[in-house]
Image (cartoon, rainbow, N blue to C red; front, side, top):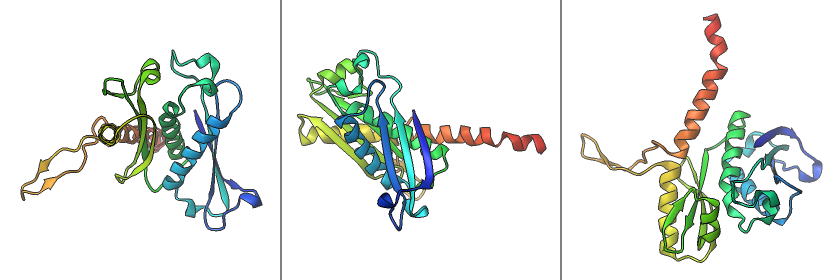
Length: 224
């Protein structure tokens, strides 16, 4: 769950003359935040600074509060996030929640960010959206975040892996976030390698925002 406060007044010590300051607060489902929460906060903050048009609101604060409501079954949820063996599995959910909250709050954005987790099993199989048991048994975990402009905005990995494995995980994540690149030959013979966004996370965010806008504009239909 995510909530946005801002742009609001910022304390003088945190004020940035030409752009907005961004503050990310992560609250675990049980207990208080610790070192791992601070680490995830720093990753999310760096990612959002690439997305938000901070120059639009100088000398203000945009605060993103992230509350972990529940963790997947089998992931030691009764012990809270601070007892988890891995830091990364929660990161895609934090990034996606932040993006949807920023869009809902009408914060000016330069792009949209989508993120996913890829786990690599002991036999080298790539697992997208892995279950908690698969995460614990994986030899490596990889987080990728792609902007709607096609850039790699976030990349975090942990475990043992080769460059080839990382590239395979990258390609799988790009397909999930942005869609599969397909060749489309037009009448002039040119090949269009633009990604197809069907069944991609970008497409899901677009659909969610269309539904939100349609719902908010229903009042106009009454007076037309």
